[in-house]
Each structure stands twice: as C-alpha cells, then as structure tokens.
Image (tube, rainbow, N blue to C red):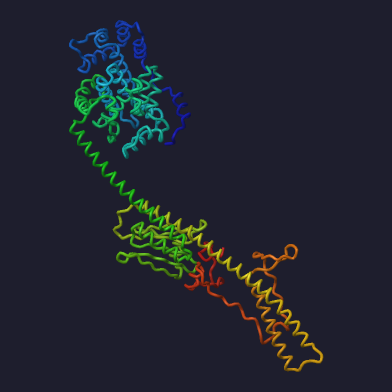
Amino acid sequence: MRKKEANEILKILNDIVEIPTLPSIATAVMGKTLEDNVNARQIADMVEKDQALAAKVLKIANSPFYRRIKEIATVRSAVVILGLNVLKSIVLSISVIDMFKNKDKKTLDLYLFWQHSLACGVCAKAIAAKALPEYVEDAFTVGLLHDVGKIIADQQLCKEGEYGQVLNIMERGHMNIIEVEQEVIGIDHATLGKYLMERWNLPPILSETVGNHHSIGIGDIRRSDINKLCAIVHVADMISNHLGLGISKDQASFIEPALLNQLKLSSQDIQEISISLQNSISTISEELGIPKAEPKTYFEVLQSANAQLGKLSLDLEQKKMALERRTVELSILNQMSTQLQAAIKLTEITKVLTTHILSMLECAKARCTIRLNPLRVMITESFWMGDAIQTRSGATGATKELLDRTKGLFPKSDTTIFVPVKVKDKAIGVIEAIYQDDHNTRDPNQDRLLLRTIAEVGAQAIQRATLITKNIKTQRLAAVSKAAIAANHEINSPLTTILLKMDMLLKSDPPLNQTTQGTLRDIKKEALYIKGLVKKMLEISDVIEIDYTHGEKMLDINAKPAQKEKPSHDEITQDKKIPEEESSQDELPGFENYLEENGASSQKEDIPQDETPGFEDYLEE
C-alpha cells in the first residue's frame, strides 16, 4: 500500500461521511453531565427516551461489575446510586460498541478487538482505583475506546484490507505499532482515535488520552491528570496483551519499573489486578454485548514471559554473533584494501582478492577469472591446504564457458556464488566463492553482498594500478625524450664538425691517396650512422622539438613525429644499415609484465573482433 501524505490523510478524514456520529441521546447525556446544575431526573428522562438504551443501562447497572447492596429498578435510581460519571461511562460505552460491533469484517477481527478493549478498560479502572481515584470511570471509558482509531483505519482508510500489512509486520517482529502504522498508512490509530473523539465533541480528557496513550513518557506523568491517565491506559494495554487478550500475538513489551513507581504500583498490585481481571471481564462482557474472553492465568503469564525471555535471549545471542561476524568481515575488508594499495600487478591483485574471499566467506575455494583478450584468460585460485591458504595462477586459452563467465553469464549452481568484476561498467572478469556440497550454515544473500563489495574494491584496485602503470610508462617516455634531446644536442654538434672536416679532407688539393680517402669515407659513414641513431631515438619516443617563442624549444609528447626522410646514398651505404629496434623487457612491475611472462599474443591481426573488451584491450584504451 502507498503511504499517504499528511494533507491527503486530512482530506480523506474531512471527506469521510461514513464515520458514524455519536447517537443523539449519548451526545446529549455527555453534554448534560458537564453542566453544573444538572439533576438525576434530567439525565434519567433523556436515557428513558430510548427504551433499548435504558434497558441496557439497567442491566449493566445491576451487574456484579457495578451493583451495590440493593437492586436498581429505574434509570433515575441508577443515576442516584451510581452517579453521573458511571452513567455517562455506561451510555458512551453502549453507544460506541453498538455502533461498531456489527461492521463488515475486513482485516481487523472485531471480536478480538472488543475483547482486548474491554480488558483494557477493566484493567485501567482497577489501576485508576489505586493511582487516580477521581478518574476511575474515565479510565474505564478511555481504556474501552483507546484503540477505536484502528477501526477507522481498517474500515475507512484501508478499504481493500491493507491494514493486514500492519498486523503482519507486528506478528513478525516486536515493533512499535505507531511507527508501523505511520510508515505503512501515513497516520496512526491513536491520532485517528483522537480525531474521532473530537468529532463527537467528547471532553478533552477523553480525546487527549486516546491520542497519547502510546506516547507518554515517564517524566510527563506528574504534569497533569491527563498524562497520568495516559500512563494508566498504557500500562493496562500492556497487561491485557500479556494476558493473551490482544489483537496481535506480540506480547514481548515490558512495563518500565519507573512508570509503575510513579503510578505507585507494586508488582503485588499488578499481580492482584491480573488475577481479578478474569472475574471482572466476565461480569461486564455479556451485558455490553462482547463475546466472553478468558484471560491467561498468572501462572500461564509467567510461563509465556519465560518463553519470551528465552527467545529474546536467543535472539540477542544470535545478533551478538552476527555483530561479531560483521566486525571480523570489516577488519578483513580493511586489511584487503591496505594490501591492494601496494599491489600493482594483476596477479598480485587477484591473489589478494581470492585469499580474502576464502577467509571472509569461509568457503572451500575462491576463484578469480580475468579476460586478457578474446583468446586468453587468467585464472587465480585460492584454497585451503591444511591450515594454510595456497594460491595458484596462470593464463590459459579462453573457452566459451570461461568467456561467458567473464561477461556476466553464470551457470546455475547451489554451491557457487558468482559476482562480475566491472571496470568502467564493463565486465572484464568474475570472482567466485565455491562451497562444499553440505554448505547450509551461512546466509547466501549476505555472502553475495560481501562478494559484490570485494568485486567493487578489486575493480577500483585494477583501475588504480592501471593508472599507475600508465604513469610509469609516461615517466619512462619523458626520460627517453630527455635522453634523446640531450644526445641530439651533445652528439650532433661534434658530428657536424667531423663531417665537415671529412668533406674538406676528401676534397683537398692535392688529393689524398686512395687508402687515406677510403679510411676517411669509413669514418664519415660511422658518423652518419651515429647521427641516424640519435634521430631514431627521437622517433621512438614520439617526441619532437617544437619552436614556441623566441627560439625556445619544448617537448610536445602528443605531437606526431616528423616523417622520416629517405636516407641519402652518402648517409647509408648498401653494406651498412641501421638495425631494427629491439624490444626490451620492462623491469618495473606492471600488467604488461604478466602478459609477456605468460606469452599473451601481441599479434592483433590474429585476434578476432569482440565487442566486449578484455583486460589487454582495456589497457590499450
């Protein structure tokens, strides 16, 4: 059900025409009792106008719940003997119960509802007799009507039976019903009850108590009689629930000892009220037209309380164990993050991931598969060997099954949990937690959440290490560029001088002998070869010098190198060529090292096109 906004609730309440109005006689009686000069005859005349109401009033007045020494034969005698407050309470109780007890059942069980309400009213009256004697009858009335807002919620706001969500949540866990109702419906039954009381123009002591019977605080009790009455109804409500007279099966709430102390109630008083409650309910339920309810005995209450304490103790122990497990998991995650900060090679990262998966998820084996390219994958596995963790890693040819896993297509399995490893929102691999066949002790949803967290941390480590690797390559390129420029400056000038002098000697007059000229040509050829090597160094680094201002030269790493000029016959002879560039192995750590050590193919023309990039493709991007 969609939670309703406050203004929407108010509009619904204002528009509801089905909220029953208090019968005119009950309204008149309530108003008349507030007058200072009212007498018994006036009240009696009003009640006797409704013969059915008068008969019920006399029946209740003569019940053991109210009866005095002599029998009450007329309504006027009832007013004189019982008093205006008692008559007011009887009339209001009869009117409200008759108004709601025949409603169509939606979700709320009205039989259980009125049994609980009556029990709460009787209990509140007994407590008020000790704690607030001047409001005994008001305590009974408020106790009887304290939950009437639930009927409004069930019948008017939740016409499709959605109030069952509230009851279901209350059945599953020991939660505050006010918070549950506000979350599910948008308004709570106490507020609805207060609204109804005000619509009926009932005295503030009734409407305020109904509206606040769940929100009373210990420090509020002594401020006013209304606060004390709220506390009385609150205690009566919990006692009724503990005695098995409630709508919900939730009976785990306990009464604050400080609250009982301020009401001047001892545990002996609560025990006596609980024991006497059964007889009191039996004497009034039939007269009010409410099915008779049998509260639990005090012994049964103690048994139920012990069972609840045992369950609560077990729940606390389980929560404690879960909290300790979460603490260990967070510690392992922190340790893993620290180790990943120092990892720069792909093999190091996957080893850190699999070993910590093994420790955190208590599985038999952990595996990480990374797609290097459409033809090869790298697999890292960690497993237990005795009390130690062993890890093995290697690259292998990519089968369709392995490629599917690295792309997020996982086979169904009861013993393996899969989570993809994504870099830039693209799956490049998968991590797996593999359990024994009899694995049933852990929560798979929690393990999947942990594995997803590990995958995200691992993906961040891969991105970070990739940036570090690219930064290392950039630094090396800059170093090569500096060396090339320095070599060009330091070597070209002497070489130019040497070449000029070689030309002068070769063109000298008289000419040198043939042997000397051949030697000079060999020296010139070597000088040209050295000059070509210096030029080659600049081309390898993809760096050229660009004049910017005032003849100053700067490195432009992004610029394309100039096209190589075709060497002249004088620079390179047929028998002496510049050797091709030899690839040197990278000594510093990086992903490329792993790929080269494991023989990853560098011939891109042999790799079929694949829309999903592999790890090598990611590096190249």
